[in-house]
Length: 326
Image (cartoon, rainbow, N blue to C red; front, side):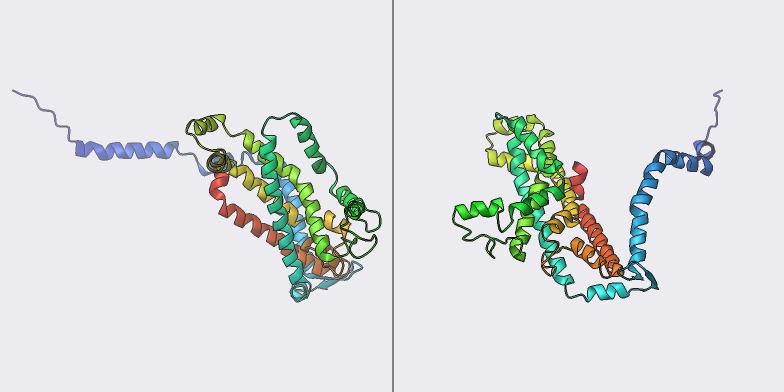
């Protein structure tokens, strides 16, 4: 007689599934344990969060509060003012030209700085006699005080005995000293381009070193493979160097955009934003407004802050993939 054993799988499968589900429920940590695990890094992050709150969030709140107060030029708070400072600011006839000049100032400096820095970084990445000395010399404009650099250039452009005018007089460009032709900072257009040149002079060292760091991180194997394939130098740069350099380039551009947009010492030291605010950017104009209407100056500071945030968000959004690769 053959012995049979009944073992129906349909009956045992639900029991096994219920057993596994029960085990999963017992293994899953409780809400309190998950909360403690999530909050565990908080004591280590607390100093940084406190610093951000004190240095960034609190000043931003005070800036916004000030922009909605009626504060006279002596600093006395005359009470809430609603949005009147903003309406007064946007009806200011100088605001349009100031913001247009700010756009020109920012993008001209960043574009010229990046082009010069790309060439310098490529040069300094090659071996040549005295390369170390050149690298040290390049740090000098960056290490020096921006205001001190601006003062030196203002002296150099003095219409009477500035070294720039002396040189231009010797080569026949400037006919007479202390005249309108020699007063480079007295003409708004000339003054703006001279200040852009000073800003580029100050910005090039950081950008060059940022790009140089990106160049040194590129593996040499890819260049050897390109040479074996017979690629020209220009093709190698366009297809290999520049794409691999893009993350470092984008970071340098972003930092330069924020720094140049908020730049103050160069313009204030060389021209004070004049004559008649014709060389003022939004940051300099904000400071000038403080002497007459602190609330309106606060409103412009909120606008500037919003523009910076917008620039950063748009830039990060447009270059998200490249920054992830870096």
